[in-house]
Image (cartoon, rainbow, N blue to C red; front, top):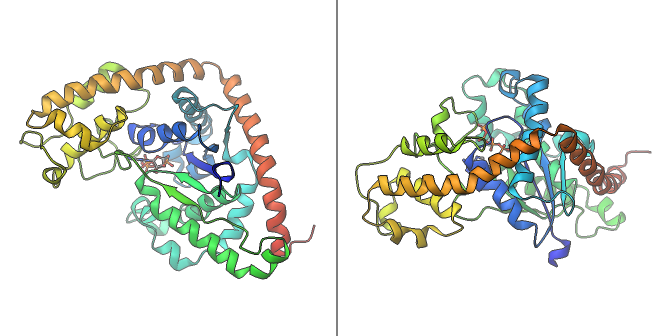
Length: 348
Ligand code: AQP
C-alpha cells in the first residue's frame, strides 16, 4: 500500500487535565505523522461520557474540555487545514457503526478488556454500558474512515487488537456481501497500532509503577499541559526517585521504574532515544537529571501552554475549525457507511 493510501486516525478524550503522557504518547506523534500521511484527529466527546458525570463534569465542562483538547492539538502543531480536526459527536457515523460493531464483537472479547476492569473497579455492576462497550465505539471511530494506522499510547494496545478482531469478523461474516459490493478482500482494513518512541507509557511522577493519568487524584502525579513553568519545575523536583545514582546501561535500568520514567521523559522531549540519553546522566545524581528535565520540559511545554491560552480566548475560531473538520470527516465517513448499510442489507 502506498503512503498516500494510508490513513491515520486517532483521538483524545475531553475529560480535563491533558497531561504529558497524552502529549508524548499521542499528540506529539500525531504532529509528526502529518508530513507523511493523511491524518484525521478527533476529540472523542462520546467516549468522555462513558464515565460518571462527576468525571466528565457536565455540559459546560464537556464543551470547555472539547475546546481545550482542540486548542492543544493546534498549539502542538496540528494543521487543521491540511488535515482534519473535529469532535466525534458531530459525525453520526461513529454512533451508527458502533451499534453494528456491538453486534459483531463478542461479550467474551469485551470481558477481557483491562481498561474496563481498571476504570469500573470494584463497582462493576454500576458501570455504564457505554464504558463496557467503549472499545466497540473506538473500533467504529477508526473504521468509519477505513483508517490504516493509529498512533496511540501503550495503554490502548488491547483496544487496537480488538478493533482488528472486529474488522476481521465483519469481513468474514459478511464475505459474500463484501465481494458483491466490490470488496473481495474484505471491506475493512486491519488497522496497525503505532506505539513507538521512548514515551509510549509515561508513568506517574509519584509512583513509577502507575500510569500518568488524568484521573489520578494527586495533581503532583502528572504534568498538565496547562501548568506554568514554576509548577512544572516544582512537580519534577518532587518526583519520586530511588537512592542510587543514575545507571549506565539499559540493563541496569531494569527494576528502577522512576529512573526509567524520568530518563524516558527527557529522551522523548529531546526527540532522542533512551540509549542516547543514558550516557549523558550515567553515574549522576537524580537532582541533576531533575534540573535538566525541568528546564527542557519548560522550554518545550511553555510555548504550547501560551498558545493554548490564546486559542481558548477565541471560542468561535475553535468551534469553526471543529465544524469544518466535521463536515470534511463526514464526507469521508458517509460513503463508507453507505457501503456498510448495503453490505448489511439495510433498505434505504
Ligand atoms: N501515561 C500515558 N503515557 C503515554 N500515553 C498515554 N495516553 C494516555 N495516558 C498515557 C495516550 O493518550 C491518548 C489519549 O488518551 P485518552 O484521553 O483517550 O484517555 P486515557 O488513555 O484514558 O487517558 P488517561 O489520562 O489515562 O485518562 P484516565 O485517567 O481517565 O484513564 C491515547 O493514545 C493514550 O494511549
